[in-house]
Image (cartoon, rainbow, N blue to C red):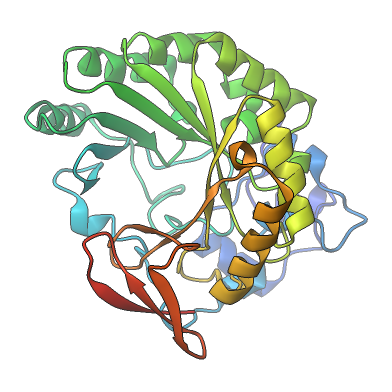
Length: 346
């Protein structure tokens, strides 16, 4: 579905998606970008004040509340960035942040301080060249991951340029793309963009960000079919969000729907400690209860891995395993991927 993107609280009010903007909401839109695509707007149930689609995309005055422990860079991208736009946290893979804008803005985004209008610029030619030079000089890099801003907001020409670089680097075998486009802006899933990505000659994996089964409407399903026809392997990433999907039944429906579309449920993320997102977070204890019930309801092929991205750039930890144990009210002892014990506070 194409149509006007609503990019301000005034636009949203005029479209009947929220009441007239308040001073608080105007402050929110100054701090964090707003964009609701026609596809998303059509999915919002305006008769439901608790609508899970609206909650993900409509600005909320609670975004101005910053809680203890919240960070501008909650997963530590900056600490692992050897070049502009590049993050090398894990030895065998790198993130390439090709551009700093998205066609829609999630209200819980962990990169909300650096992604958005006037915040993140697209990589220029020199920086893209430097990033690709870094990849070429590190033979241990097996996978390059294009990530947010949303890579499918880039032009086909730009994506082909990245593919041309990667085609000349033999030790890179996988190209992964993280995107909201199939469910939020399916018109961006074009043959031209997919051909550009496939031209790298690498195994193409596309990770869809989807949080609620209602997002998988007929337009999203058609976009997912185009991805399959392009030869991509499809994965999903979901964030466990209070008021959106924090119950086993909703997650069960979502994971079954994804599996039926030949999308492998990959990660269920515990919410990150991004500024102004406390109203989306639930406790790790509650998250583990939900996940345990989900695991009882569905088979392993439908079950994502529940993970916590430790603040400070220490990597993802499987929440369901023995490396995480409570040590008091809201405090957890976690063993990171290097075997170091750390304290995490809800």
